[in-house]
Length: 263
Image 1 (cartoon, rainbow, N blue to C red):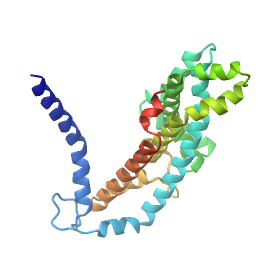
Image 2 (image 1 turned 135 degrees about the horizontal axis):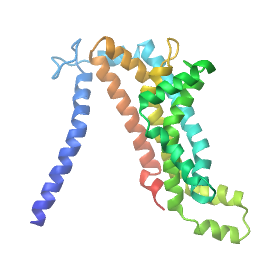
Image 3 (image 1 turned 90 degrees about the horizontal axis):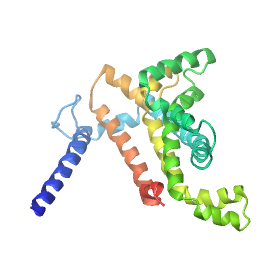
């Protein structure tokens, strides 16, 4: 009976992973198609669509814009999220629960409603179709995740080592810089990586704020798919998946995501 349960459990796990990764495999196959339209299986094989994508000025400009914005958003998410997480975990003050809930509020609101509200605020301020506007909009979505991840990491660190350092004469700043921050490094890296990935893939908020002279890669893909469908779409999907997986694998190999949420 135990052996049967084990077999069924493994079968269930393989079925779930198959359901998740089978569409990615189909997209990968289509990206090597020689056809001028989406078809599976392809009638022939070619790398021409990869060359077309890499030589497309619109997509490459969108890629550069997305990469720049994602890098800035990741840095700002850490710069703003770390002090907020530290205060929410280590300090006692009135309204702490309210502030925690307000930080997480953007995750509850519908993205369309949030995008419309941001557009109404940013238009008079002249932030539409600008790097600062897109960065601020993406921060609305990434900051709650960064704060939550860093909160979990800080809570799991404990305070025994910090208290021991203070009893030996270390100042609070010395404790934070020399004790807390190094132990929090996996959580910081994981938080920054997730913020960068979320910003790079963000499309709903970006659709409200981009313009003819500034658009991100997901928006460029969305507009392209709205007009035509060919294997170039599959190539773009493969490149986006590859970049996301590469970032996750690098972080996992360097620090391990598990360390970000454990002692």
